[in-house]
Length: 222
Ligand code: DX5
Ligand code: ZN
Image (cartoon, rainbow, N blue to C red; front, side, top):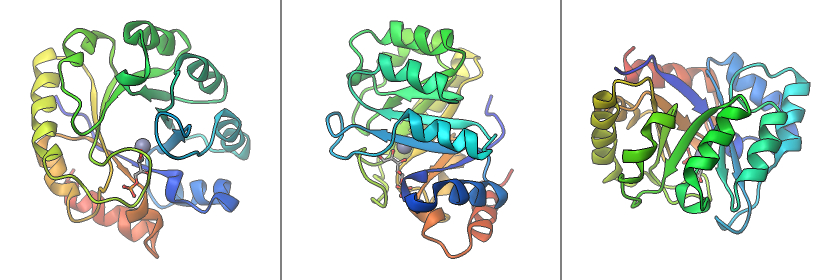
């Protein structure tokens, strides 16, 4: 069953010089979670922020769930570091971990919710054996590495497939979508079965965070 909708703005498009204020501002504007994109210039061609910055947000007073999206290789040491730094949910790409089952267990042992992230063309078969250990499945609708890219249309169908898999499992697993999510396509994504929406440039690039988030919720329709 689909869970209530969550909007998780990606801080990748925030003003990094004012990250604490910007994060609080999107939460005050109605966002539910904080999407924290971690890039290592190895698994993806960009370099962003690490556990110290996650902890700095907690120390600044951010209490909302922090949704850590690891685009790094190797994965496991950073799972531990992020769990200690205040992460609530940790997701990683199966291509980046040699032992996916072990990494999923590690995330849960550290007290966080666990998820797998699938790139646009990554097949769904990894889910067959991992589904019992998942709290979230994150589908990438752009190639990871940068904000502000265009939504890849075929991922819409992939959302429908994963929704059917989650429903068949009868488990409480969130279906998150990340990349090129805007006010214009979020309604279709919700209809296809997504319940958790990452959006970076469409929120932080808008003049009015509250109006954009409200318009997104209106399009989602719950
Ligand atoms: C891309 C990141 C995304 C990105 C989304 O690698 O995982 O979270 O920040 O940004 P927009 O919403 O601008 O596509
Ligand atoms: Zn992301």
